[in-house]
Length: 206
Image 1: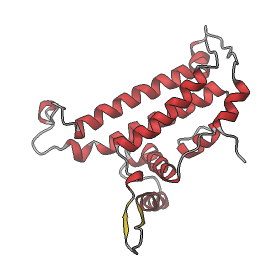
Image 2: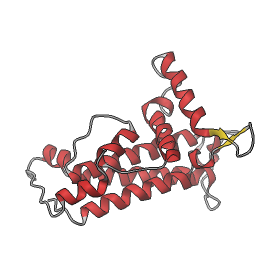
Image 3: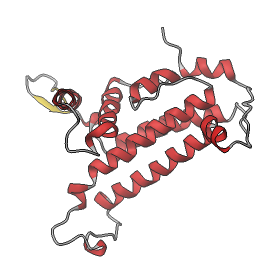
């Protein structure tokens, strides 16, 4: 049975991370703070993007930026939000791995990163993380992936995440817990942030 976050934390509680702070590359590679700072910056950017799309108090308009008549933030920015939000979750998980001294693969697979640090998520959150992963890999960056098979697999990831049988019916309904939106994202962000600061409070880094 995979170890839980609490198990990993108990093994290294009170540890002191020793890093050559005079070597900029080594310091930024090995200290969790730099990963966390990047994650926090990406989180901030994701919130700004969401507010530009849907914030009732946002005064920013496409016209103010010279984007032309008919340009719509709500049409163009949601994939950008998903990309930045997904990256923030990735970097937060890698920050947790760094502070715990846990190895992790060079991957964008968010569920794999969760497993590497022992953070448990619900089935719906697993599906949500899979969708964020797709945005990190290509969905927010390219029109299509490199191979058609990847495109079809991605469509299936989103189909399975967003649709589920409606109770007492043969029809499907949108699974609101798996929609990429601010509320669902912040639940994950808060979960990972709590784990990071819990570890940071009992492990000493330079």
